[in-house]
Image 1 (cartoon, rainbow, N blue to C red):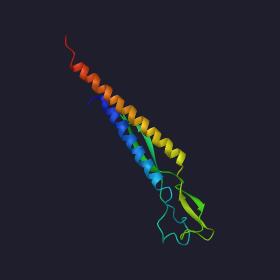
Image 2 (image 1 turned 135 degrees about the vertical axis):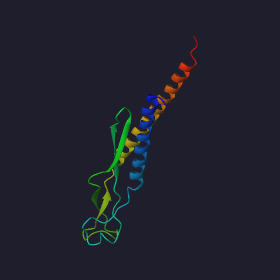
Image 3 (image 1 turned 180 degrees about the vertical axis):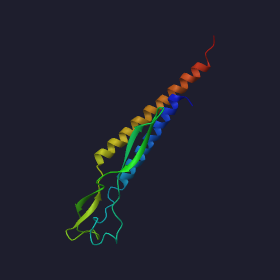
Image 4 (image 1 turned 60 degrees about the vertical axis):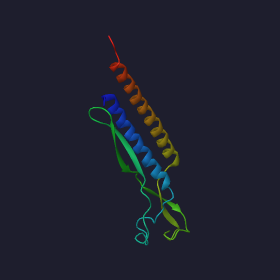
Length: 134
C-alpha cells in the first residue's frame, strides 16, 4: 500500500469511528436516568454518557482519533413522570445536541468519500505507472 493510500485509509477509519459515535449518541438521546446524588440514584441505571471524537495528526502521516465523554455528560430536565425523578421532578438527560450530531455525520460522510477518492486515484496512478511502455 502506498503512503497516500495508507493516509487515506486512516482518514476513512476515523470517519467510520466518527459516524459510529454520533449514531450511538443519537440512538441514546432519550436514555435518561436519575440525577447524580439523588436519593434513588443507585436504584436505576444512570443516564447515557455521550461521546465525542477528537481527531489528531498521526506521526508519519495520516490521522488517528480518541473517543472521550462529552462534559458535562448530562443536563437536568423536568420529567416528573419518570420513576427516578427527584423530589423536584428533575432527571438527568444525556447532553446530546442533535444539530451537532448531524454535523458530525455529514463530516464523516464527506471525509470518508474524499479519502475513498484519494485511494481510487492512487490506484489509478499506480496502474498507469505499471503500464508505462517506453
